[in-house]
Image: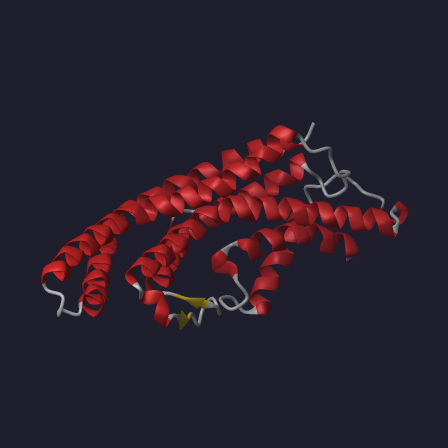
Length: 251
């Protein structure tokens, strides 16, 4: 049972990092059943291990390694989903909609309207583009590269640099997703600023929020197709990237 728990840790951490698998979205019984079932399958891929020879320190090292690999896989798979939600938050900050944030009943945390919409869109695209199957595929392949019984490997500096680039990539994606909307919103601000200079009695601030909210929503709806294409392309490229990273981290 302890070996099963350690083997399931990698899968559980990877799934928990994905926004669509948060505890508020999937009941605990269903989620745990899926994780344990995948953990049992992963044990069949492992070489024979004599658990009677393992001490507490070795168990702790194995568990830490499994959590690390799960964090790596979950982060690299979920980065594009977080980027799209972050883009929605950036847009709503520019519009001024973050002054009235709502509590998303599915995720359980405060979010803005466009942030919630784009997060939901990213989750739907992840499912119908085969992202769940690809995630399970990468998890099972990772057991061949880093078996449960394998010791904590020496990390390659080149591989560690990929984490830094992935954080930067997340911010770049969020900015690129939001850029078309932000450009229009800045132009609206510029136009209203010129109007306010010649008609100072006009309440431009109140007027701008309504105009920018309408414009942002319209542009986001026009860009939905591009968002879907970008997310699908990114998700399909993730398995090779993650497995290459795992190989690069191990000497």
